[in-house]
Amino acid sequence: YAALFLTLASLPACASTFAMFGSAAPEKRAMEIADFYKCATLSAPALSPDGKLVAYAVKRYELEAGKTWSELWVMNADGTAPRQMTGGKNNDTEPSFSPDGKQLLFSSSRDGGGQLWVMPIDGGEPKKLTSWAPGLASAVWSPDGKWIAATSDLFPECGLDADCNAKNADGLEKGKLKVHVADDLYYRHWTSWYDGKRSHILLIDASNGKVVKDLTPGDFESPTFSLGGRGFAFSPDSKELCYVSNHEQDEASTTNTDLWTVPIDGEVTETTAKNVTAANKGWDGEPLYSPDGRYIGFVSQATPGYESDLKRLALYDRQSKTTRYLTDRATFDFMVGDLRWRSDSKGLVFQAEHHGRNPLYEISVNGAKPEELLRHGFIAGWELAKNGTSVVYSFFSVSATSEIYTA
Image (cartoon, rainbow, N blue to C red):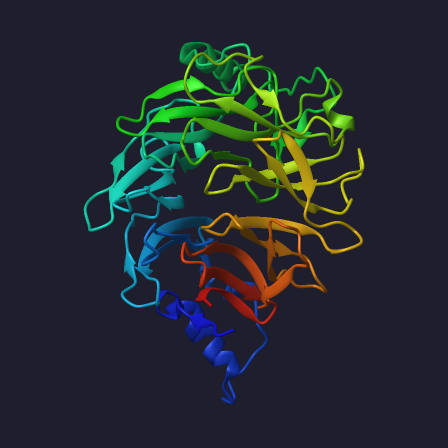
């Protein structure tokens, strides 16, 4: 493969720091933690629908003040003409292009925080799209551009009642007694307390930012917690959403998350969603519809309760309502990760862990042996061009800071 280095120009401080370490000057010294924080870090790249532009977030650090912020940048897909889109030391993250390629959608901490903003690609000021008090994140456009799905932490008993959510939140934050109350074992995950809240996926009108409905009502985490990966996706016709959720009664002692589908139109209740992977009692996640709408590709584990079980690449056929596995222990004994569809729906490109690296592989829907496409350090995030001939990805290694490449 031929990899093209794209983003050195956006990181002058970090580049000069490492140039100093690489010189033979007598001032050479051991690297210190302060030097590390002089290096900006880059997010996974977002690719415009026509494949001509790349958007990414640049996170910067101010060690002495204990502050961080993220700026959004856009450049041509060949690395030329990088331009900063946002500033002001806000946390602007998760950039994505609108389906028509004319707008950039992102999450921001500015003006109250936790809201979605949009701005024109050809220049202009950011515009606040949403004003949803509980906050929004992980936004995804529908293919027709009419809707945006995003996550929000809500109190299940409140649903979309903003006043109810605000009252409960104020009771926790402003009450005289500072305690965490748990009704069951699933009360904290990593660094976050649940405190009665659940992650829900909300449907937002892309034209005005209004929250239209809760697509995942009930006392369930939707999507479930995941270290990266995809928790929900729209169907190509924008009429259905597939998401990951665990509806087991003893949630803390099981890994049985499933793929659920829910229609975008009509009333949504706790019984509206359909479990399409109920037969598998292990973990299922990272759903992605094929461009022709026939399949949902996803990642699956077979053994219940075993978090380190082999992750396999699977296909759910929406016509026959059956699931088959493209990889298994006999044919591909490596953990499958993030995936993308070829534009003709005849194959997928996916990531897998292999000998301390996470290269990209390609496989046909017929289940032939996967073929390695790209191996380059640690690939932290990537997007496949619609023409299927190139990929844009973020990269880092133990000897190099994060940068964006194309191959």
